[in-house]
Image 1 (cartoon, rainbow, N blue to C red):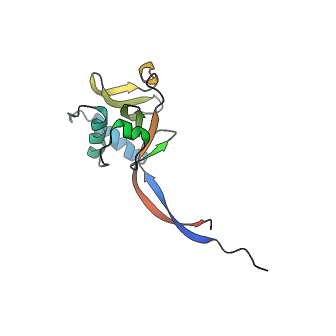
Image 2: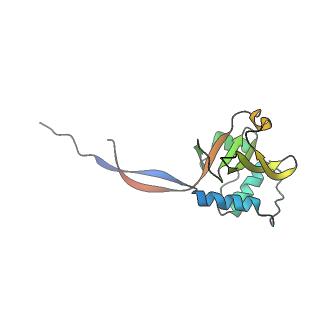
Image 3: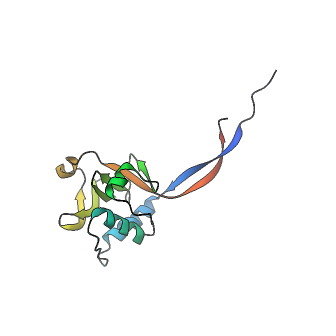
Length: 143
């Protein structure tokens, strides 16, 4: 009679995403009054802010970000510093509790409420968290 084979150790990649402290660094880079961004659209502004905060990624426009990229992981519950993306627009979550985000707005870079009627009519928003790296972990996996 044969017994059950022992579980094999497998390795898998687990994304390591921004911590809440990292997210606050992104917000600080966005709201730094001494820095003047000359980016002419939302996706370039967000890219420049993440780069300034030390979290670089290959530039992606808001449509690419909405579809999803390898540098960000979709999340249901945002934290400060996460992306909020609509088709055609992207910003950075400042306060999930207050539904506030930072982006390039019609009056220039600033903050707005993402539950305002204007943003609701753009369609559903998606939230994404930056992936700092992927770590390899040992674990017990299926055959």
